[in-house]
Length: 186
Image 1 (tube, helix red, strand yellow):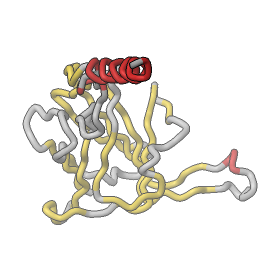
Image 2: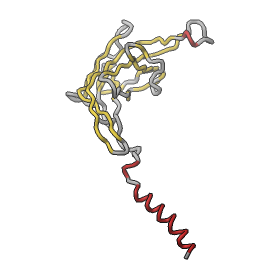
Image 3: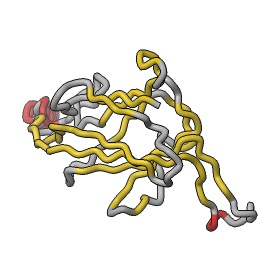
Image 4: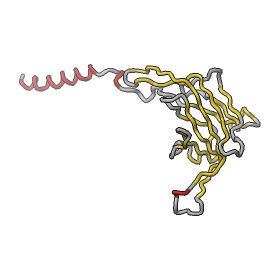
């Protein structure tokens, strides 16, 4: 009987703890979180056809200054679409997209401190309004973006390589990552 009491107490304790755990205490990986902006890159001469940009580098802009590190997925990348995060603390996100980027070592291959990136620089400015949406107790809130606009600017006056942009819907919103939000022709 004493042995039975020693076994029953831990079993009851484990059962009580497992019953107190709720399904909502862990945020599943499949749960949608704050979505990123999806841009498809299309051929300007045939807008129904995707077209790769070669040796693309994407760098974020903060207070009119380039961030030191580029977006990790877009460092000398060949791609026909972009998936870019938007700021959840501001109503504007800016990126510099460098087409056909090359590294200029300024004649000092052993010294990377003076290296620059050459290529055709365009800036995209994404404006939007933010809305917080409750997902669950475990996952918290996610941000969705409403009335999203995208503007393209030439940075180094050598002609924009991104020629036009088109939102897929009027009053474009970014609420998920299942569909394209903008088409950009180049």
